[in-house]
Image 1 (cartoon, rainbow, N blue to C red):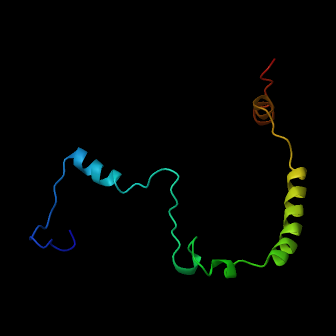
Image 2: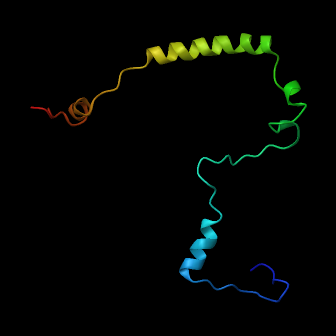
Length: 96
């Protein structure tokens, strides 16, 4: 340990199961938010509405971005099935 405990303990010895229990307690529960916001950025803060952009400004800036995303999605190629990938990679006709 970096520093001795108040009772003078300088080392801790654990069995394998005890060590796993201590390490497992440090793992967060599934789907838990790991970022916590405090102060004005907290979800229930009274001043939080004043931090958000105004509705008119937000809509004007979001619309061009959304349109650009839609165009990019349309341009994407269709997925190639596994036989097509094998044919292209190894030059072997898998289904023959």
